[in-house]
Length: 136
Image 1 (cartoon, rainbow, N blue to C red):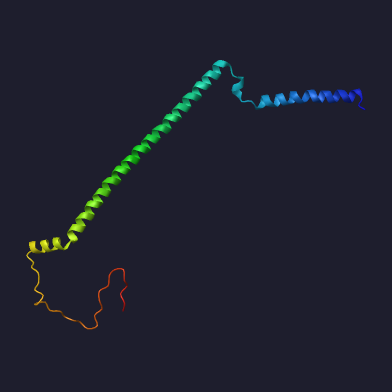
Image 2 (cartoon, rainbow, N blue to C red):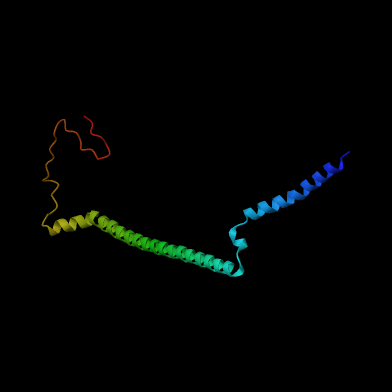
């Protein structure tokens, strides 16, 4: 079995382990656990003030971004209205009735189909649209 010396050393080792653990925990604790109540209160007030300033800054940025978004939506609505007005005016100006009235205002008259001459040019290729390539 164990001798008395061995038994003491084992009990001493068992007692020193909690002491070493407590010393290590004290080293790991932040400095403000050793502060007094006044210093701790001042530190708390400063931290709360800093958090309030950060919150107000973030909320101010959110309000500014929201205002910018509303301005962009307003501009988009204005541009959509202008685009629709332009599409309507283009559609009106492409109508045959509008073209005929503008030609009449300029003094042009419709041609008599009996007096129109059609000239046929041999080997002439038809004019293609922009989407189709010209065939040789």
